[in-house]
Length: 230
Length: 230
DNA sequence: CCAAAAGTGTTGACCGTACACCCATGA
DNA sequence: TCATGGGTGTACGGTCAACACTTTTGG
Image 1 (tube, rainbow over the protein chains, first blue to last red):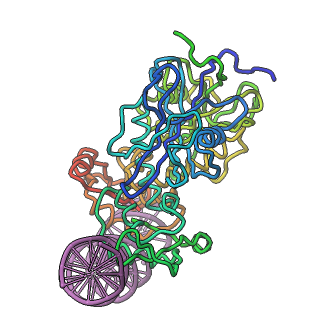
Image 2 (image 1 turned 30 degrees about the vertical axis):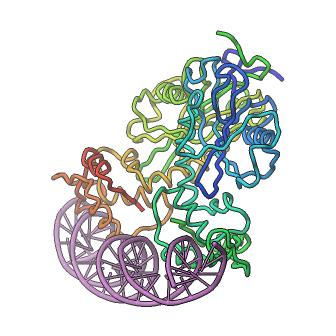
Image 3 (image 1 turned 45 degrees about the vertical axis):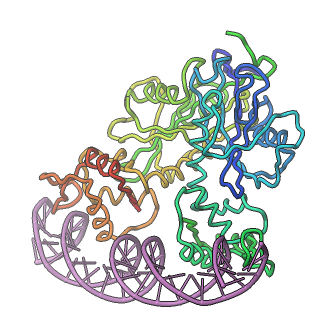
């Protein structure tokens, strides 16, 4: 291949993944302990380098699969960070990716060669480089997405209760929501399938389980409907 | 500087700018005719390469200044395009930047060594590489931004009439808006300063000129206000 | 004097928000 | 039996959308 651009600089391109999870105790992030310099021993987002023959999306998929063993993770490009001083070791720009997984799908004891750990959003450790900024931006993206797309369901088990769903939205937006208004809104969207079973883990009475009806949702979208989840 | 990452690939990083303008005939984009291979002679977004010691934001500013001579252009990172096949000449990823200028500030006869031309959005020529995709994404960003931030004013002259402002929003969202409702909404935001002068270029009666009152806008935002321009 | 664009208010529908009590059950 | 969380309806206010006529003036 002819190099048309040889007077210009080539640069390392990294990919860093902000991985959101959710459980009873709220939103959390999956972080790893860096086992290489610079920043060895510090907490960091899961990352890697873009290879010569792959897209950023594929690099992010590869990196996430490496860590979690999972395919089909919700993933979107967030922002490319490029301050020349951002990585003290070398000139590296980094495309940050926003991703969310059902936390049940990844537990820390999985043996992958990485030291990974879930951290509640409110108790994040210090992080290398500009990873904190990446997380701040990811949090904003999560809020925006959750308001207009049904990504909340990606953070819950397949079967979930309305109170669980509400807890999730309250965690994302950091505000209490009115129970009755929340239910009204969700139900009138008509995208949940009510199951016969109840989940009794949260209360004595038990709460009905629901499932997100993706087919119905897609049908509604295709017929021009819009949704506002908050 | 130690190279910690030498087992990884370095890659060319480009920056491409989608430059929006607006005039009586609607929204338009500033494109240039490529004067180097590959794609020489084709129409293209204005672009350049990221230098070793600058951020992407600064690269975009530099590239825009090169073309237009302007500083303080509205600019935001849009998305990084990275398909390995996107540039047939070499492996190059490109960070696309979304920018808007008052079209009065740039006219095509300016002599910069670039062959640049405004194209109405509806009559774009074929473009090199993935530049069309970049524009599609930029258009979406423009719609989103224009709904929540006062960027519309960046596309108009300092003094403008309400019908001009309405024409702009109609062009952005490609739909007719009701005159009375539009005025009501804009005025109740209380961010326009009405001038004594009229602009008679659009009608015999003449329309009053207004100016965007940025200070008032900032004050309102700081006191927790929100805006919806559509 | 007339064509062409600027400017002006009201109403009904809908949506978001506030708010309080009963139900089911395990301990 | 009681503490705990699940589940339910209504009323008010604000916002959005629909809609038609008068004003000004250059040609």
